[in-house]
Length: 115
Image (cartoon, rainbow, N blue to C red; front, side, top):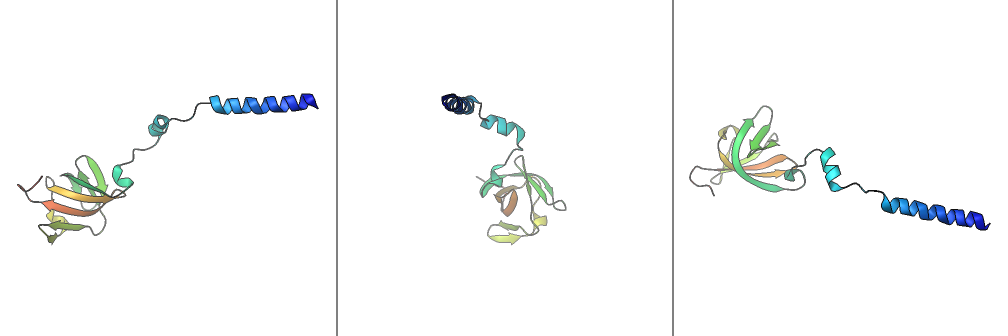
């Protein structure tokens, strides 16, 4: 009986030592195998910048190096007035509200009135 008890306690201690000493996955390890997550995928953000790429048919827009999706209907304003999507162009300075990598609202900033 004592031999079984000693063996059982030894096994439990060995198992606990193994768990304690085994390397835990580091955040660095997880980041190398996961796709990059944009800030806009996790919460609502406001992004100021210049439009570098715009494809209305593919519903894509690139603002300061980051590519976002355009929904069917996106609210576009300039000087308090509603604009159509074909009124924005590459090189325009905008402030975009983004949630889950989807552009919710675009505010056009006229030239000479930026930050």
